[in-house]
Amino acid sequence: MVCCNPVDGSDRLGTIGLPIPSTEIKLMGEDGAEAPQGQPGELCARGPQVMQGYWNRPEETARVLRDGWLWTGDVAVIEPDGFMRIVDRRKDMVLVSGFNVYPSEVEEVVAQHPKVADVGAVGVPDEKSGEAVKVVVVKKVADLTAEELIQFCRAHLASYKVPRHVEFRTELPKTNVGKVSRRALK
Image (cartoon, rainbow, N blue to C red; front, side, top):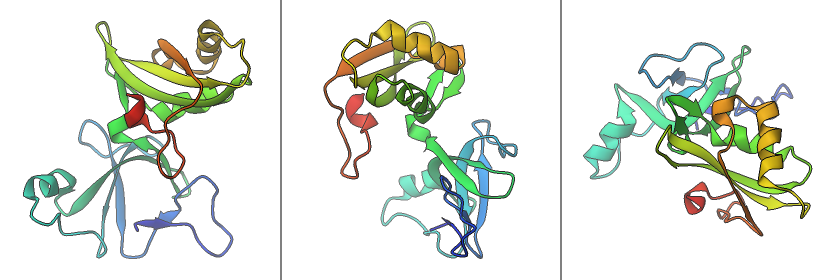
């Protein structure tokens, strides 16, 4: 554990709380520099509870532990009051023409469409941009079309975040905790 919401009633819904005592937190950007306040970055932590490494796995240890900091793989944002919010997993990020697209952001927008019951977003190879966003959707209303969904996204997302591919299914693969399995969607 590196963060926790206060138990005094000052917790913030949608956050993972504040760093616990004796724990340092920083967010690191793709460029290797600390992410500016309010910008997403990979959550890194150090403190007495952070592991010393993986048993008999020095390569994996070197990948996640750097200068005493645990690189968690979670992409987070630190709010102005210090509360932290997880944005996505770094390995799920889609790189579209050099721009980072977080699948959870695309999923949140698509899920707001009244004809959508469920959605998962993933990156797929694209000759022009390296990767493109693909959404896999379960319809709530049968007459939902891919074009209608793309137009909806254009009104709510930057152009490079708009899905280029839409696939409809009757159900989405889920993890054992009920989240859409992006690994299975890929």
